[in-house]
Amino acid sequence: MKRRNSYESYGRIKFGTFDWQQIEKENSDRASKTGEYIPKQIKSKTKGLEVDNFSLMFSKFVPIIDAEKVKDGRENIKKMNKYVGGESKKYFLEGIAEKFRASEFKIDDQSILALIRERIKAQKKALEKQDYEVLIDDTFTTRSRLVVGLGSEHVLETSLTLHHIFGIPYIPASAQKGLCRMVAFWRLAEAKSDEEIKGFKNIFYDSKIDFENEDDQLMKYKILFGTQGFQGLLEFIDSFPTIEHKSDLENNIDTIFELDVMNVHYGNYYTKNMPPDDGQAPNPIFFLTVKSGIGFCFTVLYDKMRAGLLKCSEKPKIKTFIENWEADNYLKLKEEIMGILNCALGEFGIGAKTGLGYGMMS
Image (cartoon, rainbow, N blue to C red; front, side, top):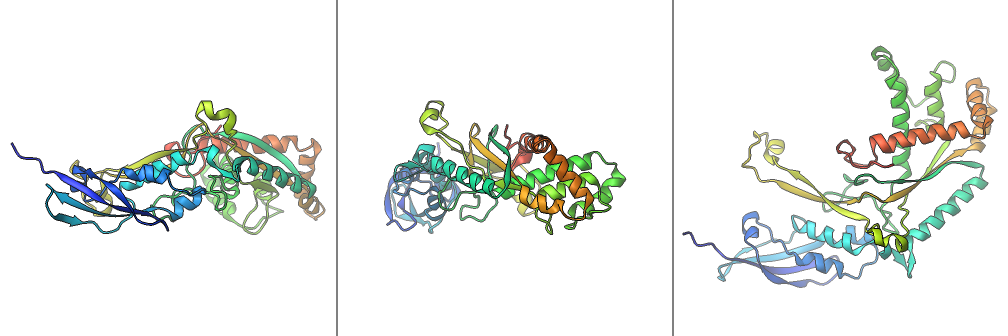
């Protein structure tokens, strides 16, 4: 019977500007096969770091590992270079996900989420004083995992959009507006024939608005959502989680994040143009997501002041649109925008990996 070699790993770890910390030795047969040192102590050490800002920790305190391996208690057989990531990434992400619950986002013992809600209320009031009409102010809840900004630059290869000051995950207003604009024009294209769509695409991407000859519905959505050459009348506000951690703790809603994984089974097929076969080792890529069941507040406003200026122009179609929206105190406009938002979040999803069901909300 072949004797099984005994491998032992040990080394040290450093988080950002913190001093190097020694880590306990561990038997690591898998490390001998993968060529990586996988210290599970990263998770506990991550949770113990005195860093209060999630965004800062996620971006600036990624662990750097310096490790060695010993075979059968003999001399050092492999000196590992300092490296970041690998499977150690999993334990780091698990650590920060458990460390930063909703109740942990605080400034001087004040809930950051509560402060953000007050800030958004003040923002809405300020906009209303500037003659904006609130069309939508509603909460949508994630029905699947949500990840916005997955492909942004990050030392760990996968990222997540976080508020750079408060460290809270959020959905940028630009992402909301872009998604709703896409759905609005998709609805128009769906009703057209193949021949009509060919010319419609060019008009859709045109930054100009032909106020005389353009399709009425297309013009309407360009006026509302804007183009590169025209500022739309709709104003979207960044969407933040709406967690009242004191009442939601019992339902485990206090936990915001969940760890997920992409597993590339045939890496050589994609990188070296080799046939896929079962002999290729999977390459798991871990990343953070916002878990399902988390509510986000969506707010959309309508710029009445600019609409009034447009109504005074010599464009009869614009005047007709705006007068129709004003006729019933914007009720039909509210219903239409809510329908677009419901379709966008409920059928298309927002953020990354929506084709796989991520980012669905209701």
